[in-house]
Length: 425
Image 1: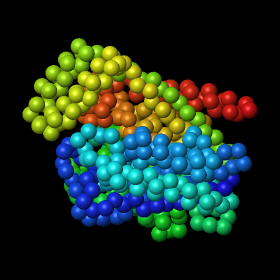
Image 2: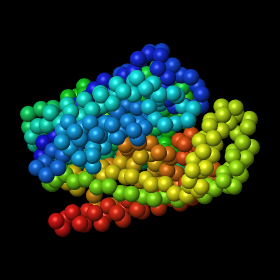
Image 3: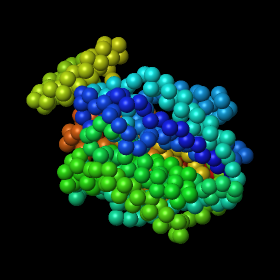
Image 4: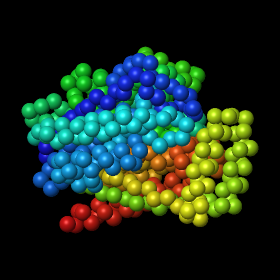
């Protein structure tokens, strides 16, 4: 096994519109608290090569990811199945996703980051060095997050997981996986990677080449928002990021030594059922949300942009009943890194962990693109932000209750079958 690391600075220019926290805010970047990066780790064995890329961005459009993968496949002779492009989901970065009313993407910047993300991947590929050992970290601490949807009745995962790759002749590489929305700073006009950036800075200072991988945090916010939403300061970013980095370090002594470094790749397709949208039900739905949000002109405007788009789409297709979700998984020995293209609730992660309990599991959100929230049936029935309104902002149709849970079971069933097949080869 050989592993390499690469990074590129993707900090946007001042004046670019930032994304997150609300609708039609017109947040223009006025300064930089800390730079944004695309970071890449390459795993190479005699049979397969995989690239994991993590970007300090809110999310990426599908077309951006496809261009990045196509370039890397051509330049490095890789297969697209071996490349996973993730985002940390900072809300203090530029608009790079497909959200309605949450910042307009600057296409000049988009072109530049395609080049820089590819550059990070190429650097990691060229940096590969022999590995001495790989450790799987699973470290519990008090945590920095809480369940923002269900409060005390909801679950939150307070474990830091990750991989520590110790190389023979170069710095060790740390992949850190934790689940909490990077929204410590609240609404502001400063560029920042939020707490994931601090995790990396602390580990870099200790001699590691680090990458942060945001977990399933669709229902998890930082604790500072319990005091007052959006009240977080730069000092809170430092505090939270340092705590996560320390938890990773504290987990080294009890870490599991991987005895098999074999790399493999898997893909899972989940066809999920949506709220049945026909021309008749469409107008009923528009009427419902117009009644719900007519007193909020910004949401009202955003929802009517969605309505016009879907009206045209229905005119072509006649009905929209389902959606294909592509899940990507990498296997490194007994560790599975499972990437889902969206904002996944904690309970869905529990379904996956329980069903794949023989493996070390790292659950990764915002993988390859960001389709939508994947909320629990309870939240969908409640018609809260995550279960209802957010679907429109993502240019989607709400899921039927129970579909996120079904996706979790599909992931378990499919991966178990694929893993069994690969072990028999």
